[in-house]
Structures are given as C-alpha cells and as structure tokens.
Image (cartoon, rainbow, N blue to C red; front, side, top):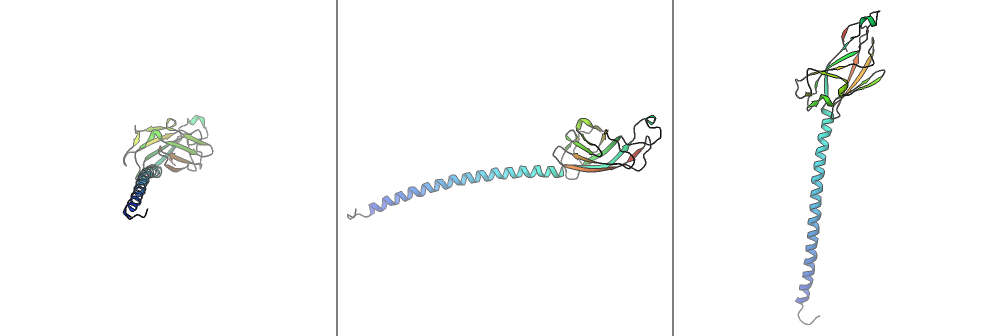
Length: 184
C-alpha cells in the first residue's frame, strides 16, 4: 500500500468522488424538473381559479326597472282592489360582466312563499338570448303563484350561469287597483 507510488490511491479516491458527484447532480436535476413541473401545474390551476372567481363576482345582471301588473279579470275581484300577479324586469349585463346566457339564469322569489324560476319558468321578451354588450337589454316576465297585494314586498335573487347573484327588492305600492300597472 505504501510502496512508493502514492498517486494510484489518490486516483481511485478521485474517481469515486467523481461518481458520487455525478449521481448527486443527476438527483438534483430530476428534483428540479419535478419542482418546475409542479410549479407550472399550480400556476395553471391558480389562473383557472382566478378566472372562475372573477366570473362569480362580475358576471351578473343589473335590473334597470321592475314593473308589476294586475292582469286578473276585474270580475274576479268586484271590490276593485287588485294585486300584482305579473312582474316584468328589464335587465342588462352589469359593468365588467362577460356574456350572460339568459337560458342559464335562475330567479328565486322570496316573499311569503319561496319560489324558484328556471329558464323555462319565465319569458324573455325582445328575442334576446344572450346579453353580450352594454346596450343589450331584455325584459323578463315572471308570473309567480304568490301575488303582491297592497304594501307587500318580495326579494328576487337572480343567479347567472357562472354563479354571480343580483338581489333586487320588489315593493308594491299601498294601493293597487284592478288592471293597474305600477313601478315596484
């Protein structure tokens, strides 16, 4: 071992160290690749979550007006006191909202009786299916089973397909006559 040529032993130790070093570099490279891949996946997932969250907050409708009408036959109520049995909402998309498909909208009526209107349960006038710009307006007609009598109120929650909600209050005037059309 100590015969006079000490350089052979050092060469063998150097090769072993080199092999260990190369193995460590390979392990580090694989770990770095896994970390970069995971970071890319997490970034994509975070972007998707951000877009969905923004839609849930901003893709809502804005109620411009709400009109109530007593469309019942005056012979049904001989005393002339009416009740609102049809509600028309004029809506447009809220500022900053994306396209809103009216077929995906759900309206919840919260009054004395809770009621839910899906897209087949209300009418959309003006042949508008999508609110796609700031000037597009649609009139939604609701015919609830619960009527609004003098001084009654109800709360509407309009939920779009993305989950954004708009809450709108309906307040009937203190006096409603047969055949009246009133602002709510």
